[in-house]
Length: 151
Image (cartoon, rainbow, N blue to C red; front, top):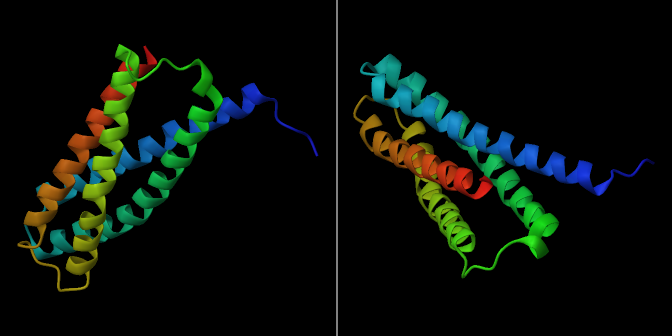
């Protein structure tokens, strides 16, 4: 069985990390657009169905992000600057952003499960607007901080 060279494995891990973030952010933007624009009961049902599907994708992407983030730390850990440096402080901000994202995502997922199990109403979308708006904002901040770290 062929063995991947460390550089190729590291590249695969980084691409998986980026792809998982694209799923998380892109899905959140799509669901946000749906919950913010739907005004009828039929539209609410579409938005809620999309939210339920996104929640499954989100948690899969979150798992990939955590695993590949740890993989990236393992690959680059010895060469990374200490937390007391500017880069290190920015990295700590990113980690706290991830913790905050996971902390707000569990209640969001539970809300979606509760709302989806009841009849779809336009009123039910109000809380989802806030939840997905916060999710998009936090994901965008994490991506912006990651961009700072990459450069």
